[in-house]
Length: 185
Image (cartoon, rainbow, N blue to C red; front, side, top):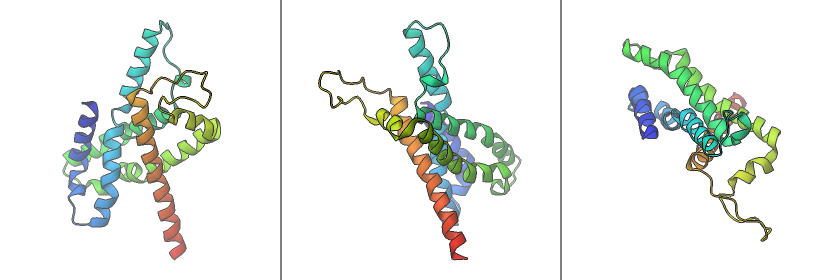
């Protein structure tokens, strides 16, 4: 339900740009509006899951950053980016101003994809590819038959992996697009 609400906020906020006659602008806005809408509730959903997991385990301290997977961290950062940049855009929209001229609009649509790529690169550097890949085995048995299979990942973690990968791909797309445009000059 929270994900649907996030998408509704994204479409209400960026709907005029999504319906624009400029196909280049609409093509740019559509994927990032959808990713942003899906990322909007993720800080709340992931924190809620981690807190309930800690309560079930009888922990008296709140979850720390070490309890998060790299993917959950990446998507939470993207969710907070939406929470920080969308309210000024909402105010501009309610005042009848053109939101595509907004600085926060530009920050969100150009900054967050690049930020996701940078955060993913830092996470890969910190944990290594093996650290990211070990979470990608969704409950399957390891090569060692004497070890039991990992329990399946919670849906929030699996969803965060998919969403984080899409955010990082959008960042890679923008980097490649900027480099290509610079080379063409």
